[in-house]
Image (cartoon, rainbow, N blue to C red; front, top):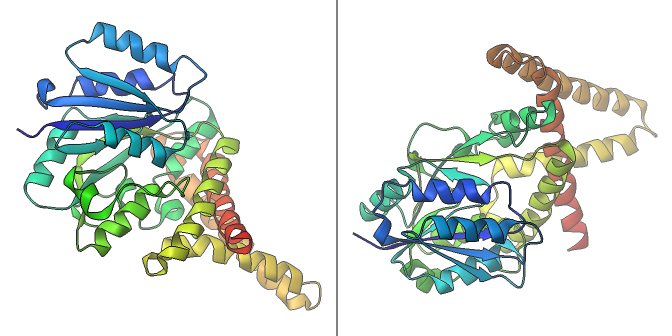
Length: 327
């Protein structure tokens, strides 16, 4: 039975860290073969005290906390991997709750040779009860918002370009290196790009499932997707061949709106074209909202879905363009 280290970067996660630890404790994988290494970015809230309370109450699960002085996700992952003793690494997030068979299914997929890095599907839930939180959670797994990011909605096991979190043999680090600490986000995608360039397979298995808590309001969502878009552009400068259509559409849409808006001052027909595109876009989002409102019996989706998807597209696309201009 391979030993497994669960690595978790975290910062100010007092609301969810206990949920994650309890989910790891409930895993079907043998507890003596498990350890958890949490790389804390000098949290200012009750994160550390809540981890300490869990350690006191669950001494049969090895949980260690190390400091992540750089306070970024990739640096936290690297410090945790450096401290890991396990033969296999399972990377999780402090906002996630893995199903009880999560680790066992990761290990089974690795042992069967399905992939060099394996991962599963997010079941996205709202972090809060308001209409914004519910709309964001629903949008985060809607094809209109995420395109062909299959790890957000698929039920079919398949080779893919990236997976959330990921599990891999410790020896993979010796082959392709650690996470890139110059990227503040998109570290998983960049890591998986190097896996594929080295001849490895990234395997998505819907039997590997975890709950992920989405952002609670549109302001936080905009900040999140601005970071995603900004650092995606920086990553794609290094690996242009890794560009997917779902990543190209938001910046193309934003650029089209900007250029169309400028040209409309000089040539009126352009204004009609831009207006037509915008009204069509809004209509499609509204129809998606109505459909989900009916399906979920939640009228707030009529506003929540269009609002969340627009924020995701515009923040991501604008940040991508800004990164190209300033980079």
